[in-house]
Length: 287
Ligand SMILES: Nc1ncnc2c1ncn2[C@@H]1O[C@H](COP(=O)(O)OP(=O)(O)OP(=O)(O)O)[C@@H](O)[C@H]1O
Image (cartoon, rainbow, N blue to C red; front, side):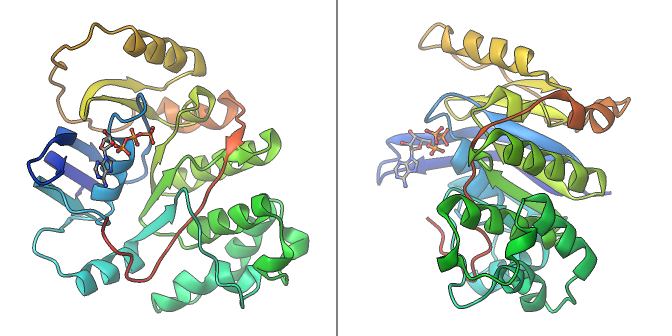
């Protein structure tokens, strides 16, 4: 079975002369149903990795395959169609449709993809993000945090094969953040693939695996991460000698063989932080 996301020797340079190297040769598989936290210091390439993996940004070289489909050579329309069918985003900016209610916003991706929204799951997701009483409200009638939660619910309700999340709990209170992380854990258990960028070791502890980037390279993969192990790893990375070549790592092949992460992740930790959602954007432009 194809991995949900496959990256091979992914490189991304910014600037005419390639002055900034955001990704320096990333090879990794995100198997279907895995939940991976992508971590690393500021500027290490986490967001670029997510954008390239989602087909929102074009790598300088290397390949991306989403649900077994190589993105190379696709035009924007084809990419949009692929994303609509298979990808959901919980990103650092969110754009809800102001004229639509919470319910309508959350069910819109399914409708646009030509699917019938699963009403029961949609209701559960909206309730789990704490907006059960607000389903008929429009974004303008909600607080900023509540709007972010709508965007999260929208991504989760779509049942897309892959959910890319960039700091999904950053702006949420502890209780709501825990709910969101439990939801992400749950959807991974149900077969969706979650790739989440986070700075928060506690949020990362919900994942099956944490992947650490430094200078655009994967330097470490931690299966079944605990918050403490992640925090220790980050502290170690901060103390790395500079500059130094990053060790080569082989492609990550997914959760631990015993599948323990799927069993334990939901119970491990509690998170706080900021949730930003964005989502699904039709014809989202590449950066
Ligand atoms: N559009 C761009 N133009 C030029 N350089 C960019 C662009 N986007 C990102 N970069 C650079 O690429 C590198 C990786 O950036 P990226 O945003 O992926 O890092 P990050 O790990 O997500 O950082 P943070 O944790 O601070 O969000 C950084 O040096 C950044 O300055």
